[in-house]
Length: 315
Image (spheres, rainbow, N blue to C red):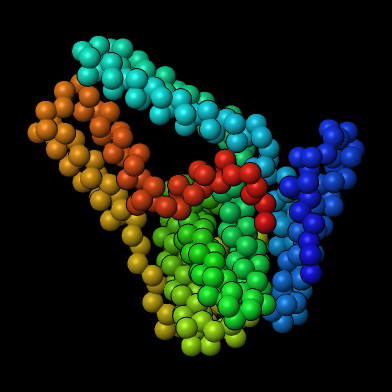
């Protein structure tokens, strides 16, 4: 079944009036729901999608993540930070320390300004992140289920990457919930539950190695359950408790990543000092190390930042 990507065709159209734009958005929202239903039918999942889940799938069309002005703000912010940091480092090496700090401050201010101007996109991305990842993973499961034998390995690899995105958003769902206070005592229990559900997802994914594509409907059914419970606000019951009996939660690597990032920054700064780098430039070395090591240690956060720049975002 061939789907028309109206998001990619919209760029070639003439400017639309507000009523025409609203009608197009409604068509795109209905198309997204129809695609999800089609992918579930391919996998043999006949149960209807919950109303809240359908509402979230429709709402992703209004997250503003595909608007050119949002991408431009993010690109300008990162470019200004990189340019001003380089100019500041050169000025510091040349003995103009105050000028170097001024350039660096301008770069940080530009990045903060771009974030503030794009905060609506960031909030919507966090709010719908898990639901969007679930829809993408279900679509990937359907594509892998229909893939030819010669193409199945690549399709299954794509499915594994989508499931990794689901796990990332699943373990961070409590952080982005607007119904949960920042320092609530409920966060620990929700974090443990999410890690346990992630372990259950690992077990379901491991069946691919023994059952090949026959394991995909089970994975998709579990994903749909997780997505529906998330859209209903049931962060402590992504799946029924009886399905989690005997499941050990996955390891939480956040603390070790923070320690590794701190050690890498400290080692780079100390090493630069021993190599004769001027003391005025050492702060810039620390910032550059953090910028380079951050995406390696936190690939999920780096992907989130890049998704604000990507040409398309909606599922």
